Image (tube, rainbow over all chains, first blue to last red; front, side):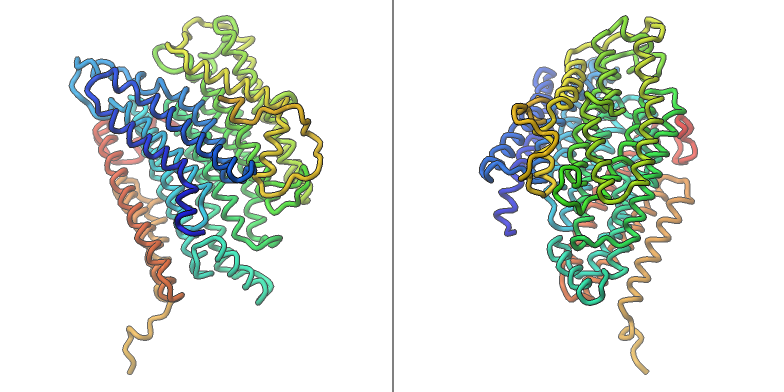
Length: 519
Length: 106
């Protein structure tokens, strides 16, 4: 691919970067009224980016490949996240005083413009990850996704926990980056190339010459997988998740639960795509098998023991990474309806993202004792004070649990179905048992909302954007659960296999794709 | 007698890179001072850089060295971020000891 085509492909990212630069500039304005525009600028640049992607898809004849699929998902979910995040900077207790000039300027506290700029930078990174066709590009895109999130965690909340968890997140992130970078170096060493297509060629030559790929290449891919596991919070790189998710403000937590994870899975799909067709070295199969089994078990078992809802959701997000790793094993799949792991992961990312963001947005919409709601006590008896939010929470946890009417159910069917078709029955049994275990803590959240005694100290956060975001996410999870056929077939196209045949789920009269439903 | 510099092979450079990387990992795990921990991640990055340059020389192409330039850029960005975060935390805590973070338990 030459330079001009490459640049033509990244117009959506350029739009987001311009939006981020504009946010930084406007964020410097003296007047509060002007600074308030930064959120709208971020929203506008997301919409422009989405429009550019849609135009590119139309030009390509309506075929949605992996890259546009991820970009559209990022735009759609990014808009919901932006609605959740819109209130973050205001929550800092001194921000208003500083903005009004009653307190001296404190850069750590006035973060409105920068916050939205970092938000957009990180989303740009995810989009660029989906564009990657070269190891250097992939590395830069992954770092662009992660570096802003470290700042967002550390500065989003005026509490020492947020700063500590931000520092912890940063240090582990830097170490993980070094690990996958060493993996990239070994891949380069084994093949002499950094471009994905040339690496695949070199690997094919090694297969032709020796019947296997070189141990150096296998080691490189293994190290890369381990390093990228940090981004998806998979075992052995999972232990930061609970602390960081708890320490960050709820809106940033929702961001962390979706954005770096999406980048991580796209990177994993790209890295496994470096292997020649139909050949996965046993070492990599076993690594993924063990990682998947451990990740979901650790996530679910530790999730049972938490008293803080944010920590429960953090462990739930670890467990969901485990489920998606199951799909990763079935990556080199046939085009069957249930056979393609890539498509299943792409679909599940959206399913998981909507449900998790819905749950976090509900937490962010509530306040207890001047802080965001976090514990089971805070949401106890929610149905009597905030019936709509309780309903949204119920829909979200049911979708995370994977009960039939919700989108999470479809997602799990596809993930586990693809793994069964590839013969990983044992792993699917573990995954189903894990889903059963997860019911305990998901239903604990739901029963706290519906059957607990309200202590009456929980009030809603001012502003409509968070409850609205929660509602949109939950309704999208419900509608797509009923009418997910279009999204499923889109995900399957994006997974790289033509959808020529009639499949079981698609019914032609149900049009809404992810983007239209969630806007 | 041959010049020892001419008998250096790829393996020597790879070994140097691996040693830097592993020392970085060990230091990162065993040290508790935030700045030392950050320097250890930098050492891991430099180990990767040595490896990349060695492979670049071995394969007779410049891709690896290009990679190193980007790597150094990111390492610089991370250093700026790390110092910012460490200063932020130091002002709250008055210590750089990672063990002092007792607020949250995994």
